[in-house]
Length: 379
Image (cartoon, rainbow, N blue to C red; front, side, top):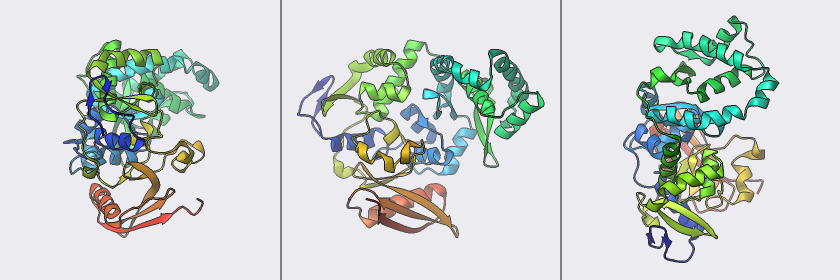
C-alpha cells in the first residue's frame, strides 16, 4: 500500500484488494481489537442489529477475548444500546450516543412516514396516546417485552394488528422515548431511554453529523462520501457538510476513479499480518457499511449473500479480505459444527478456517465440532 499524507495521493490508484485489507484493519477485524464491547461499538459508530445473534458476534469478533455473555452484559449494564436509528433500521450504538442520534435521524424519518401512517390508520392523537401508555408502564425502571406491549395496546382499545404495533414501537424509538432493554427469556424488552441512559451526550445537528463522519471514516475507511451518505441515510448535502468539517484530518486515496477517505488513526500494516480467513456474521458492517461493496465482493455475486434481495444477509466467509462464500453454525451434542460453502474459487487453508471456527466457538463458550468446506454446486 502506498504512503499517504493528508488530502494527497502519492502513488497510482490502489487495487480493490488493498482497500479490502485496509478495511479489515479499520473495522478492527484483522489486527488491533477493542478492549471491551463498549469500546468496539463506540469505535464503529453504529452497527446493524436486525439479527440479535449476528450483532452479538459482530461485536465479539472485534473484541479482545470476548464472549456472548460479555456483550449481553454490556447491554444489561447500559453501556451499549439497541434501537431504531439510521435509515429507520435497528442499530447497536454506544449508550451515550443514542439520544443525539435519535434527534438527528428521527424527525426526518418520522416526517417521511406519513403515507405509511395513513395506510395503518395512525394519526398523531393515537401516537400521543400510545406515548402516555408506554411512559406510565415503563416508569421507574420497568421493562416490557414486545408481547406485553401489544397486550397493553389491546387493553387500551388500540389494535396492534397489521404492523400497527410495530410501527408505534418504531415511532417511539425514533422520537427518543424508548430503546431496547436486556433480553428476558430470549425475548427483548423495551425501556424508557431517558431512564436507561440518564446522562446522554448532547450535540447540535452540525456537531452530530461531523461526529458521525469522524466515526465512520475512522472505522470504515477507506470509504467514499457516497458510502458515508448511504450508511447514514442523510441527504448528500448534509453528509458533505459533515465530511467537510473533518476532512482536514483524513487521508485520501484513489480507487477505480473514486476518492476514498480514511483516518490517520488506522495504521497501515502489511497484508501478511492479517488473518487469511474470517467468519463474519450476516448484516456485518464489512459488507453493509458501504454503498459500493465491489472492493470486497463483485456486484454480480451479491445474490449469494442476500438471495433475491430479500433483506436477509447470510454469514460471510472472507479469505484475504474478499467475500468468497457463506457459512452456517450448527450446535449439536454441545459442540458447534461449522459448514462453509464457497461460491467463488479460493484457496482456503484448512488450519485457517479451523482457527476462525475456534474463535467463534470460544465466543459462544462451546467446544468446536467438525469444520467442513464445500463448493456451491449451482456455480
